Length: 264
Image (cartoon, rainbow, N blue to C red):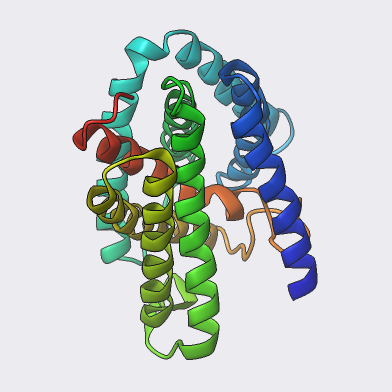
């Protein structure tokens, strides 16, 4: 299982790196949209949508992507605000878990999880010459947080982080993930000639918020009794199991980039 997980992760990682570094924003948006739409297909399952309802949900997300992207100079900031408000609400729900959610609420939550994160990642990508590097940095920071948490958690994890939601996560793993994410952000600052101290702080905050995204999807999976969001990625489960952290991390990364003076 670990070998399969590593191989799948490596293939997906190389594909995403190539997409962000070598494709124009329009084409990168199309490729990333396929990944996010696969996530929408799985999210529809969390909302207990089947058949035409599930396909219709994906179609709504696709239409939203097209409309938001076409008007991205206008829609980016409102989507950023909506995302930040949503993830504040999600954090409050996690702190008071467990909950039971109605299916309409789950379906609506999927829209504010998926649409802003995809749009803002593409806005980062389109931010001039440094855009592809910024978009890749957001991904690498989250990947580093995941790898650090997995490695340290497996080796040293003792104290459960959120036993009612995701029993496998530990505080020790969180610390390892944050440390590796900070290192990744510092390395990116050196490569992209960005303020190093500010980027390290942003890396830490992005890593912390990425955990909120992960736990939120876990909370919705528990709401319908699922362990994985799907089975599209061998060794990893579903697509949402891979992009859940990103959906929360990207808006915070975008906000932080703006606050430290990066034009996005």
